[in-house]
Length: 85
Image (cartoon, rainbow, N blue to C red; front, side):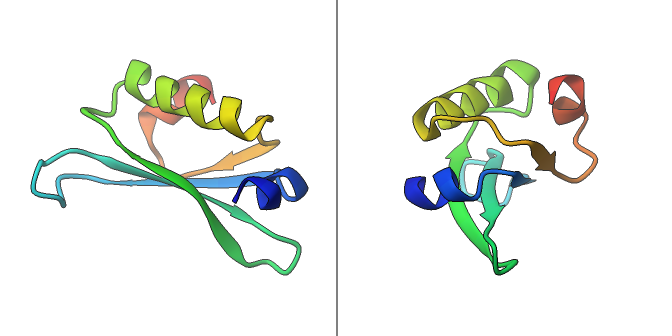
């Protein structure tokens, strides 16, 4: 995952599920696109809520680990992501 992201870190796809697990907590899923237009999983996080501070913490942890922020982040119309990213 990390080596693929270091090659293909232009576009990151993010989506979340809401209250679909037994804990009723959002699941953030991160994926990227390679040179063959195929997606690969970057990571996921179960968070307590979709507030700015929760999502921002996950972003910082993931992209610090991966070593670079993406050029473009694609998501649905999540208000939290529009706030900063």
